[in-house]
Length: 301
Image (cartoon, rainbow, N blue to C red):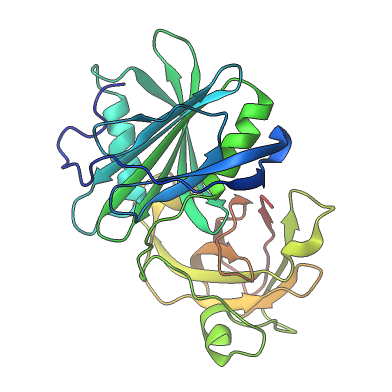
């Protein structure tokens, strides 16, 4: 594939470092583990030894492949000062529409929590090979963009590559991190809120996987918002801009919550006890017009 961002500077030259041990990579069974590291040691991930050999790419990243399983490519990109994860995503979407890209955006899948990191996910389709690509995008400290492209040839290969992605490590910006709450911490209560017995808005955080209740309790943030585009009273959070400090609350152990809000529109976010943002399937935007409201969310747990 051609250069991902022609206008941006390449930060790192390629380099590798290895550590050998034994690791179970999901459905791939027991496999010797190797660790790939960028030349300055700030970006790394682990992978099974039967993937490879490593093929360095000129932006400082690497390509890995296993026949019948899949193809995995990590690229390192210098971003403009202050670039956000959403901005990084939007730039790549724009680039994918140009004639000099071999893959075309099929669907913007939005934010997803991968291990302890937040990624912006794209689905692409190759113009000639008719293959489906998945792009996972991260922003690291120092205005560094990390892009991982995957071609999942088999379910086994897809599961293994997701384990590789979960192992990805890079220096995260303090601004982009969410404080980790603890039950006894006053800072956590300030950052995440606590369960409330009553409020003019109530609801429940529903789970995609109803059998796994470990996601509870959840922590909710309601940010006052102003609509800047889209149809009137849209339910698309991208049509709104936050204009005030969030109002915070938390669910009980069954996912139920209460919160007191003034009339208006709010952008809703839901966090785990570890401070990671859950991907919302529904409930991103709340419009409060009356005195009381029932508002449910659903997370992809």
